[in-house]
Image (tube, rainbow, N blue to C red; front, top):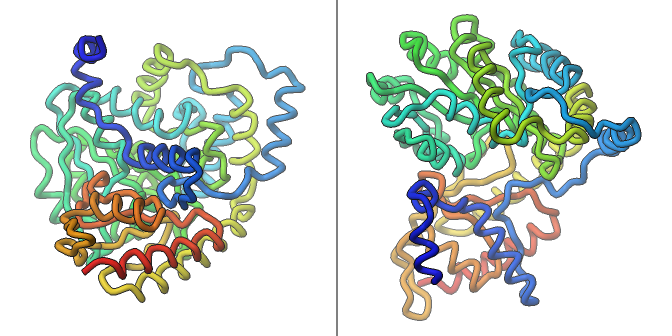
Length: 402
């Protein structure tokens, strides 16, 4: 009966891959439920709690009876606050009607892709990329076109690479900065180089995923939509999950040209309608606050990053650059391919992650899921105590490989 039931599923679902990050987090929870002491460095989730001023705003929202349906694209005062945030932080002028509030930035991205992509349309996705970009494109029957990068150039694409990837079928490009999983941050000059290529193709829309904007260790941040000649080609995606430790609140948003914002509202109106009313009241407090409020959290992440880089570089075989944002390391681990433990050979990053889960009881994510099969992603969004224990376990396990 089970086989028959599976055969009844749509090809769309059968062709869809499970999120590797969610899958590894699930495995970690299952092992912990069995009493096994697993340290999970697999999920992109701050270990901090949501700030009290945001929780207070949510409580006030409940007391003020924000419990009814709202406009599909979000409460007007929240959209106005997001508009002000874009001007304050990014020097981008979006009116409230160009803002669409959704149930997480993941839905924001899906709305845009479904609004723009027809079967066979190509979508450029620089690798490494967030695991869901490719699957969302495939769900829309588009064709993901990866652009390979390397650790030597900090996992950033060049204008020449972008130019070579564009053809008459190209409809969209999706990138993140700071990047999940590499932590790379594009400078204004680097974005200008990419924009010079893209402005020659005005029918190509760019999704700029900026969800890690405030977890940024550089002294500056730049959004592609702030270039006047790119404003009408860029959709800026952001949210409160990462910067304000609000992953469970599920609140993301876009700023976009009016025609795209209207299309996203139309799609969302048939799928979920508006995002949670109480999450929206909490988000209003978050985006209205001076971004300086997140500096203590960012500084803690920087301390952890520096510690993890130092320790992992002391292990022969880990090739690591210095990411400038987010809370991930993305080492090239190809030096371990071909090594063995108890007769079992490590041939790829998937097998290395499985080995570390089994022998070190540390959960990581294979770079294969992010389009970079020689790498693994290590999240340092965990306490320093957990990170120190995880490093010790990794060192002991790696020493077993020969």
